[in-house]
Length: 317
Ligand code: UDP
Ligand code: MG
Image (cartoon, rainbow, N blue to C red; front, side, top):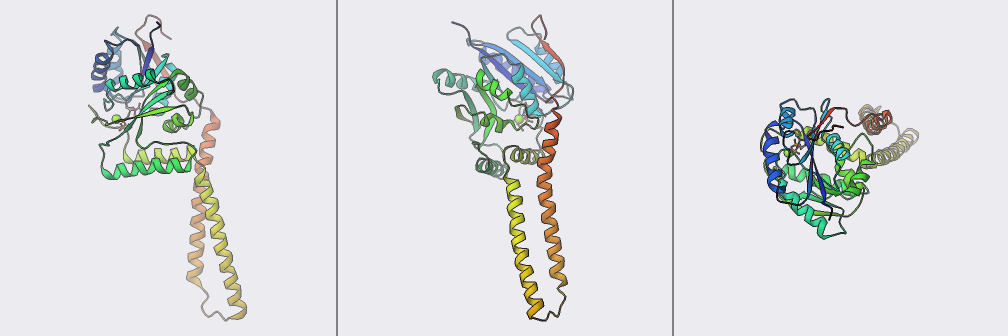
């Protein structure tokens, strides 16, 4: 029987100290298993010695290994895309390089797909978060809001630690948008996904690339990528404020015709102008966010620029 080929995609941004321990854990997990393994590392513009570590790994002959180096940091979504593009396996897994997601957990995902034809992908969701209560609340509220305002289902805590069948990978790759919100894209392509719980470990070495500020910008960009609700809110807000203004105009006309107005109404005027002005700016800002994305999409820039692809096979791409 033909051996299943499993590609493991590993985005790396300043992960020098994690590369060797990660390789060791992958080796320990798969040395006795039957799958043919391909490792696809993406060096996403690391400023430390990640590339050097990856070149060391390339000297090993246990598995097929590819290292794709970007010319600068293009972000995890671009790195995952490059990894999926270069993966040749029947099954493709995405895993972080920092050992927060243990390579041994890939096995239950493979078993899930083997035992059940109905599933096309498997995704780990965080059952217990290691962050503060506030961050946990913020993240799970985001998933709830996203599920409500977009057409797709966002499972609370769903990670990028996933395993796909080849067909799912091809579908994900067919979405070429440059503003990539991968979690949304993974759900958008559909297919049957099995969700398994896991508890992430602490980062082995180094620090996370995602500060709170970056996460909020990423979350807002996710909302804009997958929902047009903010535009509808702007429209409804405009209609409601126009109705209130109309009512107020009627009151002013009534006062002018039937009553004598002693005070010219300066504070009311000022408040109204400021309020309407800021509402207009707010709506323009929302529209601007969408226009900016249309602008960026029309440029059709590639998602990443690669400097080199190295492999441990004789022939290189
Ligand atoms: N990563 C990347 N490019 C980036 C940021 C992160 O390839 O611009 C990789 C990083 O090396 C790691 C994974 O994406 O393998 C998750 O990143 P990180 O651990 O910083 O995020 P967190 O686990 O805190 O969400
Ligand atoms: Mg991490």
